[in-house]
Image (cartoon, rainbow, N blue to C red):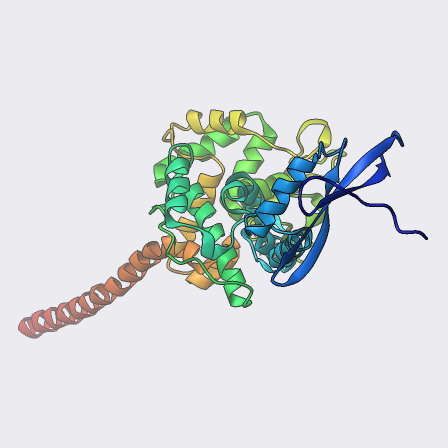
Length: 390
């Protein structure tokens, strides 16, 4: 194949060849530049006359800038892009770490919640950065921004997730960690709701008077089983093992399925509870899973004269736990299992109630001693009187 003719311009190191315009096929000049760099002759395309609006003058300017080191050669540009891509693939950004983190975890409710937090709050400000590139100032700005519109617990959860993602990369030797400690808002979420004997009695009377069987039995189940609101809404008849005496809680808050005892009180509630064609024990509209019953249970709560901040279902879960703990007959580990707490620290909020029960039991010793001493003294008096009569 004959060598294509070159036409030199009036500018040194700039020439052009005759080509065809892309699309139209019409004649078009294609400009090239040649120069020496580090003793090596470089010859490369500058651009097309029509498509790139290239002229001999522009090509000459391009050649000058490359000679002066102000502009990379085409080869250097390709190598730079290649190096950048290689560097990018070796960078463990927060986004990449999060995707890898998810692959190592079982898909459960907790991971779904974290994924929502990541997409909503962390992806935009930190997704493209490696942990070591994140500034404390940026995290502080996010914290202050979220504190204006979110609860302190939500803010803490978001920042803890960022910390967890960074720590995941460090533990697997994928990247360096955050160069600072994340300041999280302090919270006090140890909220327990309890009822006095009078309040509990008033509530039970209000429950019996109400004509909504679903609301009545949901409240009884919360009180007698300690199950969470969402667990009761998701409860299916197939999850109630009347023969073995267990309730199978599926997809609970902690993520792993749990078995809790079907005690006598909950058995009585479920035995008398009406069954429909729905698979759910407490079905919602059209037999589907229930999503709300606030109006009905609040009506019962108000009828019993309970405090406004008492939560009818979750509050009764607290009552369940508080009564067991204060009885002094249930240890913390057993209570944790009954409440299906994943973290034992969640159960510790009831520890003081058990301590009170133990103190009361301990104080019995003094009463027993006094009683025993009193009996002996009484016997001595009786014998002395009998001796005098004789």
